[in-house]
Image 1 (cartoon, rainbow, N blue to C red):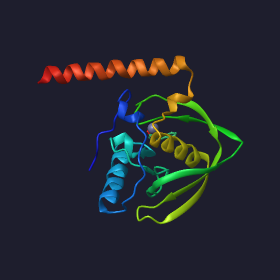
Image 2: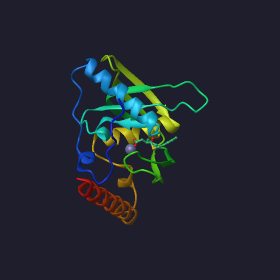
Image 3: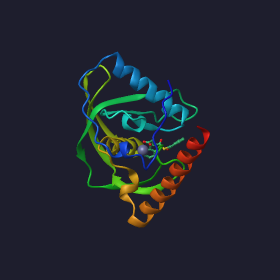
Length: 176
Ligand code: K1U
Ligand code: ZN
């Protein structure tokens, strides 16, 4: 099931997500829905809070167009080590559609997490996986990639999306 993705300035995106305690079919259905939603968008990652569910769950698929899908599910992910070395990537966010900016982050991270059945895992990530994991784990703490930009850039993008949200609300009122 495809779920609607929240956009800024929705305050839910600023909530801190709670740890997952139950590894049941409901959790696995949510992860499957998130993957379907991410593929449809399209995107390469999605955190549960972006579909309005404040749980520490995220999905990623970095397969290229000509490769078979490589869905990855991370439950209760935690960064346990970060490199001193930094990398700059142009990031986007499905909650800030069609807005891309360069962000500097540690180039490598070690992430401890659980899979959808509760098994403990660790991944040492570099490149796009490292950037994507840091971006998605930030979502679980209510942080967005625009928080790394200058106040001027951030204010500008928030203003633009606030205007869009107000126009949409007015249209919906008119349709009633
Ligand atoms: O968390 C999100 O909002 C998803 C986001 C993940 C991300 C992208 C780039 C750097 C860090 C994290 C996206 O997927 S934005 C869309 C995007 O990157 C993309 C869309 C179509 C094809 C390839 C990439
Ligand atoms: Zn995002």
